[in-house]
Length: 211
Image: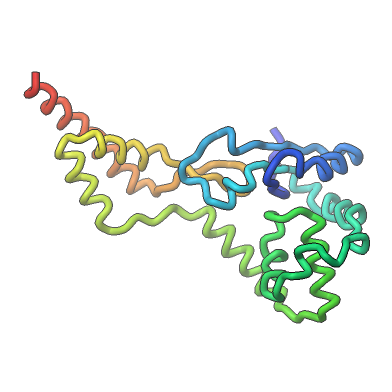
């Protein structure tokens, strides 16, 4: 199976129609994925707000970029477009997070930056995107006291401890590519499996004494 990667995200399927039509017209394979249908309690706010992902093959990235540049004309955009009210920092932020915006918005932001002669460090943008990618692929951090407290709760035999253990074991987060990885590192998940066993044993004896 070909390795499709996320090119852009949208708030709904309708918002993606312009881009998908362009891809179809140029016979470029793509996948429109609805990550909202696969509920993930660890999904970030941005992912929840823009759950529709358009994915393309990496080798088509430059071709699609050029098609977007050629087909989305910023000169036709009215000056009352909301991006004209953005500060310099906000416009640069659009460029930094281009996968979160409509192609026309990204092109318009670049155009406004040029019109205003805004000077920015391109290397800073590249570094930001690399750091963002690294953070997305990193495991979630837990407060130091979480594991000891979870063990105590599991030993007490409550369903809460059982639920915490299951959550730590199965919890996953979505990546921009549409793939999912475990939210917590192997060490945390090993602790969680022991918690699950401890909680099960504790609840067994608890219920046995109640009978």
